[in-house]
Image (tube, rainbow, N blue to C red):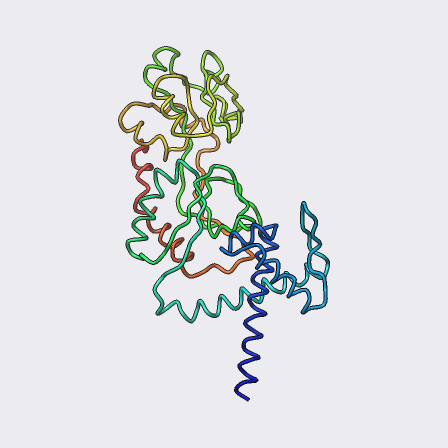
Length: 317
């Protein structure tokens, strides 16, 4: 009897592992990517999928050399697997939350400039409290597919969020128009949004919008697209160029705060910017159970930025 029970338990464990592998293969978009995310070899992932389809007696995926897609049965099975695995993780996580020390890996994605300027110290402080947490960080300004890339959590700075993601606001940042004193001495200091249209140039952030959302002297929406003398996909580079007097930048205050506080940059038309604030969010897929370590890290970040959003005090007039 004990042997039979042991065999049943082993079968159930094998089924759960097959489910996890199948879900990861679907989420990652390929067996190769799934194997990389689970730190195993492609042949092992492929065998688990083959064994699963053989045990169920159905085809879950149609596979070609270029892509894979779910069959109708595979789609239904995938949805059931996600719910079952999330329930298992939630139950086990709830049991261990009170006593277990935080450990494991957190795969985190963050914008380059915000990450380097304002996330690194937060991570070090969190790691000091929880040394068994291992961070795998992707600093990148592009918008990643969290599920396909196996990312647990991402930091995004935006006013619009993907509806397939869950967002928790950590703090906020203000958008500012800034230039150096030397630049304004040469080109004049604009007093209205319309003034920007005469003799002013921008340093353009290539991953953002070309035009600036402003208000004219009557308080009506005005989209201003200044001639660009320099384009770059990095905020710190544009900041240095603005300090050097090359043009105006439309930039979050978390980047410009120190330069404004030191007088290297001056902000203008702060009351004419229609889109003033952007949220800094922690986001994660809504289809996934949020592990205790990730949830704890989000809670930590929210508390941390309540006390360490130094850019806000430096740019408050």
